[in-house]
Amino acid sequence: MKAAVVKALGEPLVIEERPDPVPGPGQVRVRVEASGLCHTDIHAAHGDWPVQPAPPFVPGHEGVGIVEELGDGVAHLSVGQRVAVPWLGWACGHCEHCLTGWETLCEKQVNTGYGVDGGYAEKMLAHADFAQPVPDGIDPREAAPLTCAGVTTYKALKVAGVGPADLVAISGIGGLGHLAVQYGKIACATVAAIDISDEKLQLAADLGADILIDARKEDPAAVLQSHGGAHAALALAVNEETFATVFAGLRRGGKLVMVALPADGIIQIPVFSTVLGGTSVIGSIVGTRQDLAEVFQLHAAGRTRVIYETRPLTSVNESIDEVLKGTVKARIVFEM
Ligand code: NAD
Ligand code: ZN
Ligand code: ZN
Image (cartoon, rainbow, N blue to C red; front, side, top):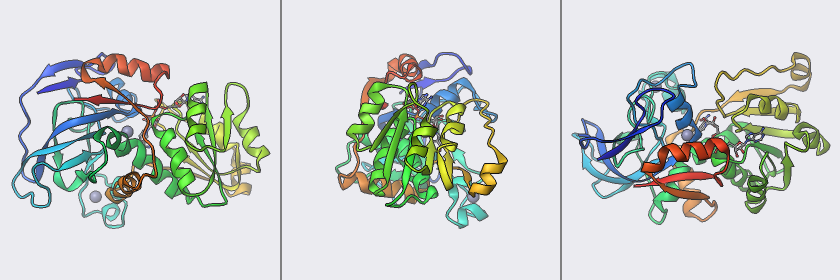
């Protein structure tokens, strides 16, 4: 099978021929049909974060495909079934986080495409308990971006507790942001979309955003304040300055949800207005298996649109360049 491998951090990926992986107890082997390119995969390949992956490794945590072999003890999945293999590749099931519905915080978790090989390959392994069944009728190329971009933004809005009378700011209309806009509308909120590209802002408008803010031309904080301030802001742009900007656009009691992970990201926030404004700053990491099931359920019901462009896996390095240049409409999906 073919796989795109990070041989050294910061170096171009290499397409390699590898033997098919063999599922161990509790695992399945998946024949990957479609695999999304999340900006996190670029951070992984570049070693941007304090906890770095160990090369060689295969990135990708939006892999979707067909179960083709079951390891010992797997009873609830069957050969031929379509599953998605998300970032949360495994969690212990016993710690306080796992037991309280916060498996995404499990300290023993294993991350797909980071701690173990991921979806930039024709075949991959998954822990059966964390391989998410994809409902019939969802195209695998649409399921792929939902597997991270979808669940992450759906969860971030849940964490922010966004409701129908709220103004929610979505900063960065990329792979994550184009779905965040739609979950904001599903929550019946007023959605303000912020980006630095005409195409992204047009896409946000097409997907239902109510207020469009071009951060090249206007100050997002001032625009948000002119609307009374945002109840919540999702920081999705890979640029730490944008975190402080949308923070300044919050109303009293507002919540900044940090989602993007720019390298060496540090933000400064003013103590005085945070205290007097009762403002919250919250980190949000992907979503649980149940969150992903809900994301698929919404898509199967026709309530979300996934905007993607397909590429062959062999164009992985050019595809990464496209994402970094900001020329991708929303998400690149590798078709195997
Ligand atoms: P992306 O590259 O598809 O989207 C980023 C968007 O930000 C683009 O539309 C770009 O035009 C826009 N942007 C750039 N500069 C801007 C600015 N100054 N103001 C407003 N918008 C600006 O990336 P993505 O795949 O959507 O991922 C975004 C980030 O989220 C990455 O850092 C990724 O690692 C992170 N992420 C976090 C989680 C999590 O669970 N917390 C999950 C997935 C991804
Ligand atoms: Zn991701
Ligand atoms: Zn745990």
